[in-house]
Length: 63
Image 1: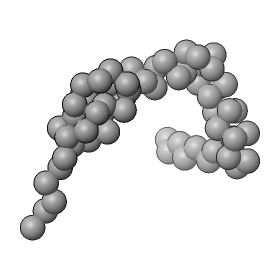
Image 2 (image 1 turned 90 degrees about the vertical axis):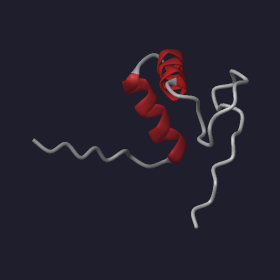
Image 3 (image 1 turned 90 degrees about the horizontal axis):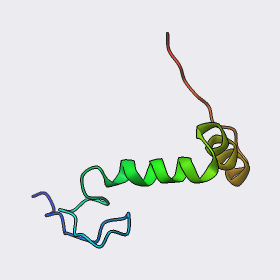
Image 4 (image 1 turned 120 degrees about the vertical axis):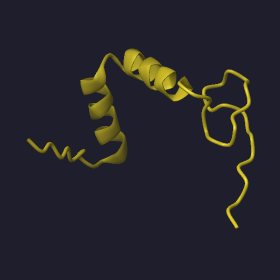
């Protein structure tokens, strides 16, 4: 029998309760947008992640 999802506070900090996930619908996109804005763009976010993890991001782009 599948486990029932437990409501919890939204991971964005808004204070709303989710229906069992980490975020309320659309709030994950708002958090990501704020992070990208704070670091100065997607390229800077990539560099920050690579520096923090000490590993390059491997991007698999299939044409």
